Amino acid sequence: MKTITSRCIFSVVTLTSLITFAGDIQKKQPLNVPAETTPPSEQDAQLFLESTEAYLIRLNQKVSRAKWIHANFITYDTSELVTEADAKKTAAAVRLAHEASRFNNLELGEDTRRKLDKLKLALTLPAPQNAEKNSRLSKTATELSNLYGKGKYCQDDNSCLSLGEISTIMASSRDYDELLKLWLGWHDIAKPMRPLYEQEVGLANEGAKELGYADTGAMWRSKYDMPADDFARDIDRLWNQIQPLYQSLHCHVRAKLGELYGEDKVPQNGPIPAHLLGNMWAQNWDNIYNLVAPEGDNNEFNVTEQLKLHNYDELKMVRTAENFFISMGFPPLPDTFYERSLFTKPSDRDVQCHASAWILDNKDDLRIKMCIQRTGKGFSVIHHELGHNFYQRAYNKQPVYFQQSANDGFHEAVGDTIALSVTPGYLQEIGLLDEIPDTSKDIAILMKMALDKVAFIPFGLLVDQWRWKVFSGEVTPENYNKTWWEFREKYQGITAPTIRTEEHFDPGAKYHVPNNTPYSRYFLAHILQFEFHRTLCDKAGNKDPIHRCSLYNSKEAGLHLNRMLEAGSSRRWQETFAELTGKQEMDASAILDYFAPLQEYLDEQNKGRLCGW
Image 1: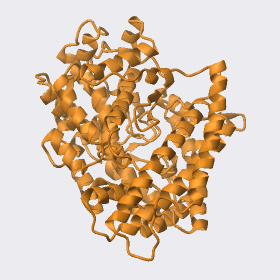
Image 2: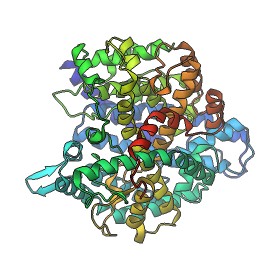
Image 3: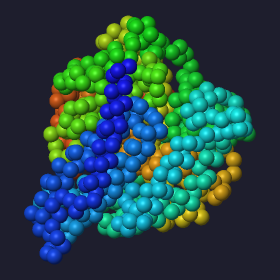
């Protein structure tokens, strides 16, 4: 108990010092910025970057520690203090972005220009320089976040369900009407967001224009080392490659749902009602696997049961995942990782259980925060999260501006690449399986994965497709909801289960919209992970089908992976990507190769069915 008390005291001291620190910095005309009496020079830009880097390292450390403490000790006071610290950091980021824009028209060396661009693009929600508008945008963003965070579906004053509780029911319920009530109840929480979101879009666009971008969506797309419109076209190209596989999966799932609920509720020539796929947003369908499973699947490949049988506790699960990376030639994690990480949910306090990977000092203070469940999914998630940690450590020698993944899709993709290696073969090597299931079981394994990975891809695409058009003004507030459902139907083949109007604001029922988290990174990650997996399996000398390949014990694959990780974002992502894969642009053929056996199975199952919508 003494340790907990000391940490609580430390959290208050740290947060208080952070606020003082950030506030003091904000009051000054900082960072060696020259007076405006003469045009800026390259030397001025370099001095600005040097002093800014030192400042950012200090600020990032303090804010990261504050957030860690809040995530592990959720109280009113830590929440208030970390909110204030976040606001000060955001204000500092806005100021630095505007300072960096002073050098927009100056001819600079490639490295200097890239650092300045990274500084400007660090903002997700660019605020106008006007203090009143800056404050209004911050307040609006907080209100939107709070509306989502406090959202509940209440059947009456005494019976309310959180999103987590709703999701648990939707994962297992097959009652059409119950699912509809839950879906409607959660989407109602977004109605009050509409006027706030409209205001936020206007203010953010004003801030983006001040930084030299056409709108906020164009600013987001500018983070990908190519013209913003080229990036949008690249996304469409990738989707066109994957669409036939998705449509085959959609056709099969729709047929099975029609058998269960009746074709009057699930017409076999149209989109699927959004509430029937085991997930609030119909973005992952793995919860309905039992409805679409291949005949004869007897669930032999049950990692959860094997973990229980072999007495795996949370620490052993983490050690085993770390050993995966060590087997590829990566150095072990520091002892502090195990001393400071959170692996289990404490019984004496509230914590944020959502799994996340942290680096708190820009060097090697690596941690994960996760309330580990002793399940097969939990085991895979640990491998994923450690992928983030090893990435964070690999680029820690880069300047702070480049201490991030090559593009934001790479970070998620690296973790998922490692998770793809949690195959039956790997589990047999570490003693969790006695025998590798024969190839007759592959379709069941691939079906489970497709319901998670393939089903997600169009949703990963459409969220930002909608936002980009909102930011550009092509979609006006009068058509927010109408266009949202047009996109849901166009890309996902999903329809609202009841009539939706502009009284509703259904995009706001998804966390990433009211919380302004760009979503294209998840679409990219679902493409990149299969590209990385195929390339690294080739370098490992794999001779098995790609879906059976594991990178466990391959030093050669580890060498190539680490080289990519160490580069951070110091180069255009296309160059980093090409060094690993030999190609300059992303390609979806790897995911098609991975699921090729499943595609054959789906083609056979779909004979005589009318696919498409």
